[in-house]
Amino acid sequence: MDDFDFTRPAQSEVYNANVARLFFHANGKVHSVAAGGALFAENTTGKGMYFLSSGEVALTRGGKPLDVIKAGEVLGEMSVLTGEPRSATATARSACEVIELDAGGFSAAIQKAPEFALMLLAILIKRLRLALAMRMLGKGQPIGTIETIPTSGAVFDAALLKDLTSNFPARPPAYQPKNTVIMREGEAGIFMYVVMDGAVRITSNEKIIEVIKAGGVFGEMALVDQSKRAASAAAASDCNLMSINRNDFLTLIKTNPAFGASLLRALATRLRNTGRK
Picture (spheres, rainbow, N blue to C red):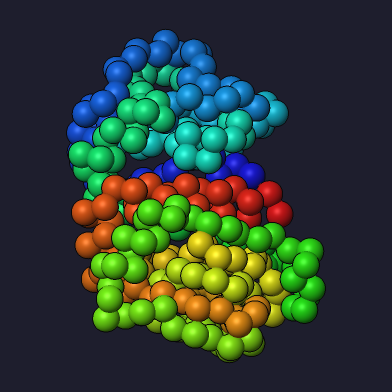
């Protein structure tokens, strides 16, 4: 399950290969890779993400095949977003042309085209939904033992949190007493939530997935892909939550690069952590 180190854009209705190509060209570098050449190796530091302009790339771990990336797709973004080592090796199956974006180039490109974050979010969410479904087939943590489960802290820094609250003065954070149900698995998603203080417990099939603490977010998946909620949420302690609806969410993605970049890092980390379990 830790093979979620790459995306499959063809699986996302939001993804547009031509838009992705332009995004990578804005601040990237074009490289030719001979058949059999390696783009990156597992357990090494990830310095770049790639748009595959032509050819095919095989992804392996420990010499075992994971997937084949085809022209028009993106790979290697997880390591750049999370800052963690590669979880797979990428080798050209045929002569390839790629456009490489390093972390600095990605930051610069997302400043110019912040809406591209929505494409990457949609791709990561498809993989996260699959990871959650597969995890639920195994053993989970019983409800009530939140001290031993994964926790998620601040996604947005203090400056961005201040911007968010000032952008929605008519929708101040709402108080939620401990054990209040905030959203239910299978429901339509109307809001995403930012935890201003306290903690929120995320569960699926009566198994705890995560505890979200102050500065963390939840509920954003349903706003991106408009699918039903993948999990339920309840207040693990008294807390205050700021709610953001889909229209406001899309506006923030398109106008605030820091908002989209922060969500991408948080979702990539959540995906990698979920896959490891």
